[in-house]
Length: 253
Image 1 (cartoon, one colour):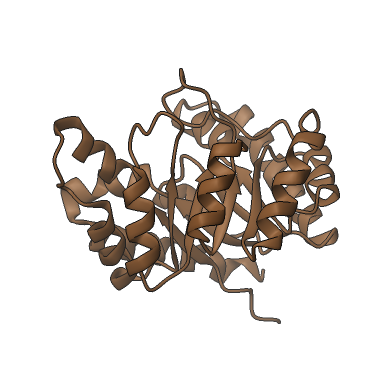
Image 2 (cartoon, helix red, strand yellow; image 1 turned 180 degrees about the vertical axis):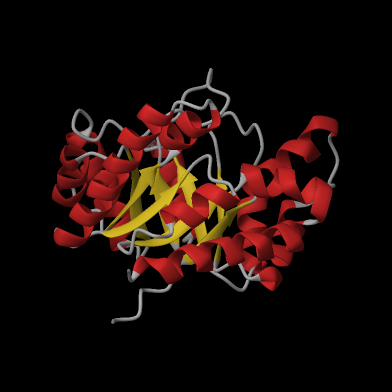
């Protein structure tokens, strides 16, 4: 029986900045949160620099790149402004995500089929700069095939619909959405894409999704920052790591 692949944890620190910005000033500092997350076992740090700068600011990205000891994953819209920033900062990775001013948080994956010609030059420019590019997509075969055709080496599956179905007690829909995630993760491996997943995950859903052996990274933010209010950030991350490891231990079966 083969050993399952290691599962990385990327911690999104956006909502530390949300709390800071609610009052202004410099605290709480998302860079300090990133450092604590790494000490507690995070394999990388994710931050979304939105067009409206509602949480992470440009200076946060610069300070993260300069100070953290683990890879920085910059979530960004596929716009010229964000491309220029990414090429200047040179994060380890860039995840292209959809973005609307009216949304509270990212509502779904990129419509990569419709945006094929728009996305391809962004993927090319970022890749030429040595930045690992991922596309945040819905768990569909068509989306993954298009991601591969535009040259993205990594996809991140949107787990939000599955998590929402579980939260609202819709067992039938939850079963369908988990099935889509399972099929998409397997297809990613078949066509040579590295597969990540994220959005709406908590301890229980992270443990469950970790059972899919093709997924090699989870990116989790809002839940961890919320739990940190009650348990502290380091403990929340340690518990998340424990849940992920428990699920991954079952993946080989």
